[in-house]
Amino acid sequence: MCAGLRTAGAHRVSEMLFGRRTSFDYLECADCMSVQIAAAPADLASYYPAGYYSYDSTRVGLFKRMRQGLRCNLVLFAPAPVSAWAAGGKSDILYPLLRKAGVKRASRILDIGCGGGALLRGLARAGLPHLLGADPYIEADIETPEGVKLVKRSVHEVRGQFDLIMFNHSLEHVPSPAADLAAARELLAEDGCCLVRIPLVGSFAWREYGIHWYGLDAPRHLALPSRQGMGQVATRSGFRVEEVIFDSTAMQFMASELYRRDIPLAQLTPEHFTKREVAEFRRRARALNAAHDGDQGAFLLRRN
Ligand SMILES: [Zn+2]
Image 1 (cartoon, protein in one colour):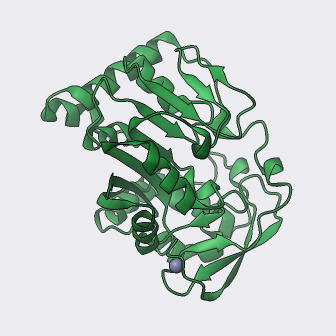
Image 2 (cartoon, rainbow, N blue to C red):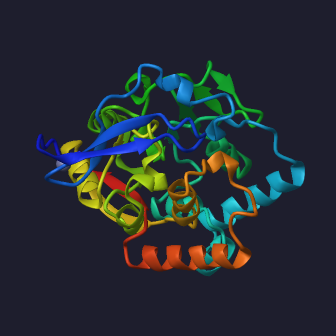
């Protein structure tokens, strides 16, 4: 992240999303506290099985489609009070983030690491016409039922110019985030915005749970920045950080608690936590976000 070469030690982390429990060393940077996997496994693709959630491309019912489209429109384009009302209470803050990023109906939007294209499909239902998804790990180029093109490419292979480029929890999955950010910068219009949503090392959940922290997600997450490291990698890639919004959720507690008890997330059932506990996790996540100590952040980057 910061291009530093000194390590402050290693952390041995097990695969716990599916419960394979193979373990991997993560090296911590002595300068910016970011961590990265010492060596990605040769069979990394096998850690993205067919049921991996981001590739879910199931069709969505008509009522839900209409509701999603309406909500997206209100949050993005309605006057501020209406926008805030439509965004209220929803855990996913993508649409408010896009509003902050200055998205217009005519904006050309690129989603890097789009998986099954769920986010773009939501935007397409809201009537945004210029959408492209890229993901080197999808099976082949496809067009979604909404007409959104998803191409089997990395950011280095995409051509064109875009007003918004998003890395929605995808930058932590690439071996060289600085190179990928620099490539995105080349594709960004002069006044465009690059949105990076990513887990953050050094946050409360990392300090509290250590190697059991959900955000590590070994071995799929190859490099994870600290708040400081994210600023440094952005600067090195030709960006300045315009704003950071902390958007951590109850998952930082639920999943990390399970991992600490040696229970894979795939085995989570409603019996593991009471409603009261989940409500408390949500309250604590909101408090951490307000204190800028949540375990994930959204970085709005502008060209330097
Ligand atoms: Zn560093």
